[in-house]
Length: 191
Image 1: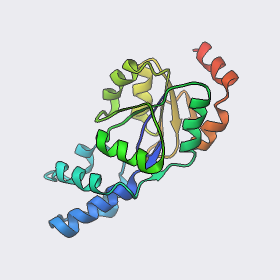
Image 2: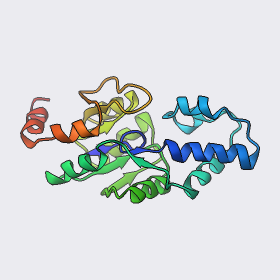
Image 3: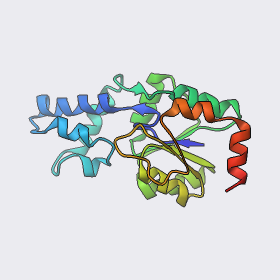
Image 4: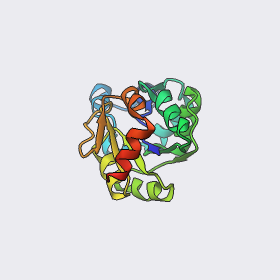
């Protein structure tokens, strides 16, 4: 089973906001941090203003991932999958180093991280990892799951609704409670 990272397993907003603040304070960028944070969750190329140094932003993020927080129910969701003998893979637009560091800081142990992929770019990693379901917070995650032949599980924890979900939960707490073997077996066989 696969999970998206940002706003699904991990609230990475504090890490990104700190990187933006450093761009302004240390590198003389003129950024409206409030407006940017209100649109959080888009790929970097669509989120940072044109002309921004993406490599610098990523390096500032990587320097301090300690501000990351677990999304509600993230540890319980991972534990629920493991209880049933499942593998947990993260498929994310974040760079691998940053994803791994945030997960490590939060004590969330996964079996693999497939990084630097967004929207349809997540389809191939989901197929290669043989993921039967993908949990995400965005409509593009739901589309990627469906294209990969996986169950699209949405959580309403991101900045946009997970339109197109086969199943939707308020957060990962609700996912963990609902993740019972009999229920999921019925879901898989009825597809």
